[in-house]
Image (cartoon, rainbow, N blue to C red; front, side, top):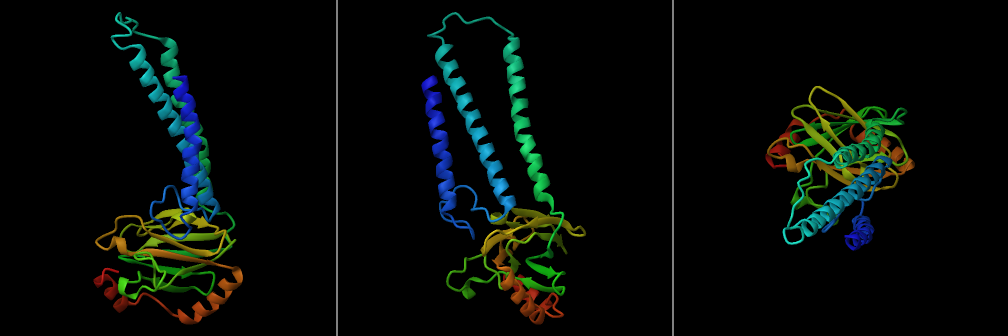
Length: 282
C-alpha cells in the first residue's frame, strides 16, 4: 500500500503538468483539437478560476487515491482466505469521528477560496467603462453608453462567407472591441428568453434574463481575439449566436470608437436583417 501511495504522489504532478502543457498549447482564442483543461487565461478572473480548478483537481485526485488504497487494503487484508475468522466489531468511535471530521475539513478548504472567487468575479467597484450586451433569438446586440451610446448587432458569419482563418460557428460579422488593461463593467440582459454570455478565456459566463440586468466585469490583459458562445439553451438556433471579442490597445480602441460613432450613429435593430438571420439559422 505504501508503494502504491508513493507512485500516486509521483503521478499526480505529472498529470497536472500534462494538463497545463496541453492547455497552454491550445491558444487563447478558441477550443483546440484534443485540448484538455481551460483555455489560457486572459483576465485576472480566469486566472483565479484556473487556480481554483487546480486546487479541486488535486483534492479530487488525492481523495480517489486514498479511497482506492483503502479498498485494496480491505480486499487484501479482510478477504476470506486472509481472514477466515471475521471480527464482530460493530462500532469504532475514532473511525466514525474521523470519517465525519475529514469531509467537513475538506469542504471548509474548498469553501474559503470558493467564496473569495465568487466575490472577486461578481463586479468591479471602479469601472473605467461600461458596455451592455443584449441577447436575442438568435444574435447579440451591444451598447457603448460611455462612448457616444452607439449600438450594433453581431450575427454569426455563415459558412459560405467565412474568410481564411475565421472559425466556423464562432466568428461574427461585427466584433465587440474592447481595450486592454481596463476595468470594464458588462451589463447583461435579454429581450425574449434566457441566454448566456460566455467567453471562456476571459472567465465570463453569465445569464441574460428578460426584464433583469445582470452585472459582471472583465480586465483583458493581452491583445487578441477571444471567442465564446451562448451557453444557455435558448431555442432552435441556440448554436448559432457566437461572441467575438477583439482586445486592442487603448489608442487603437479610441480610433475604433470614433469610426464606430459614425458607422453606427442612430443605429438600432434592423428588422429585415434580423428576420433574414433567423430564417437562415444564423
